[in-house]
Length: 123
Image (tube, one colour):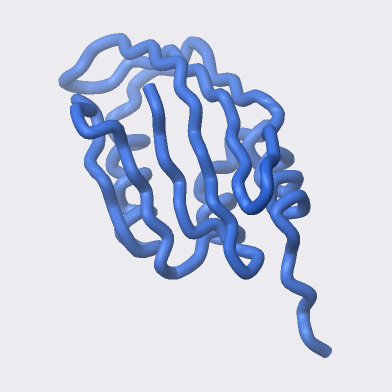
């Protein structure tokens, strides 16, 4: 039996269910394509771009390792348009070497063939 490819609406719904539980690595494992790209703003003082599922995972793991405290973590419901969806994300955290960091961002995701192929951060 062949698995049915998820639609963008289905990917966004599953993404949201996991995001509301702060299960970001599960999102990557389950929903990201092998060739996913993760793009930061050009002048980001926090993270750099990454390409490929393993390198995107490493980028996330390295960021999480630096978090020493979390005061606020919130994610909006996704807004869907065509093969894209966007979320709002707000966090207030302590990060080693940076101190307290408060970011209010929009993250845009692109879905192809039932998988996320792009995440792009705007903050």
